[in-house]
Length: 493
Image (cartoon, rainbow, N blue to C red):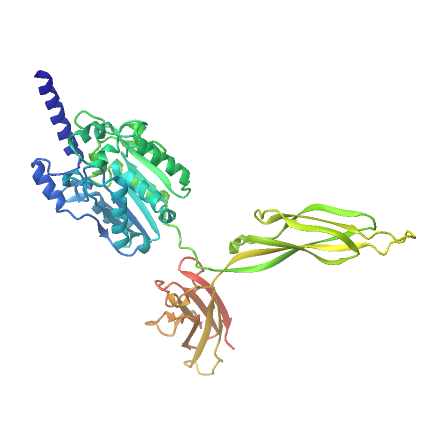
């Protein structure tokens, strides 16, 4: 009887501990009230949705919720602290929610990932933003990893993940906690390397070789009701950088201000990984380039060898050799030709093997002439065609206030109608055309544009993204880069 009582007390203690781990701020209520309160919280939502280049995505952990997990108090939450921080005003903020044991969840991690991807697609998290940063607590870290492994096309948009107390070798509390819940998430968090699911996830992640994704980790140092839920070994495995946080498993993701260690850790990671400038859009084209080697042979002789052919590739245009062919050209006085054959194209080089003999001498020992041929390798080179602009300038007029028509064409863009041109006229400085109220000129789907301009001594045309805000009367023209894709200047005729 005493044994059963002791076991009941131990189980009761663990249940209470699991509820605390949920991160709820209303733990004084009964479990039914907690479940109803959590159920009424939004599953996934934008805390800030401005169409920024980067979005920071918060993914809660086991027994957590979209609001309670990150909240220090009813008025203070981590996403809100970040939202009000001008240092990170160039990033949107998105908070993920998924069903937890409060709802008698029956979905596995894989099924939650599928459901979560549907919500992310619906809210255009990956399509609206160029970069997606994940902040994950506890089991949320496993969900993020499985999401990226399942939908690998999204991984190139993720510069880094910050894991807070994520069990990479399984959490002891989860192994005990599954006794009290039928939630399959708990069964997939058995402690130690015996957990086949976690080992498989780790192996799959390593095999994916996500070279562009940095992994940062923070681990708890304070026990929660006497238990260190995720220890240092489990919480820092496979991380590039790991730091201890003097909080427990729940409070490690509840910073009360921007001076909290958890907040500073993320702040530093964001600063170390600034938003990358948007790449200039290009159009891929192919062209042929030849490599040639002139070879000779005497009568009754053989010329047979393997040569290495190469081609110059310009990194500025992201050039690469995608294939090659070989031939013997301008051959004369040769026989018994073999090849030429090519090896595999490697970088800008390929091996070419050939052989041929010279003519036989006649009965009198005379040679009809030396043999020769040109070994020719034709490389097929793919290159990126950068955006460019050409235009005609109107004829100069004696009237200082006269206007003219300028027209031109933009090349090197797959969908030119998605971009704009900005036109400047120079007199005592550069003035945007045609009007201050209309600084952007449309481009049609063939790349052509046309507008009226005020005349001056020189004209400049910029190809820009539609979100670009041009200076109205600069002394110097904006340089190319960022939203300015191309620039061309021409004097007035």
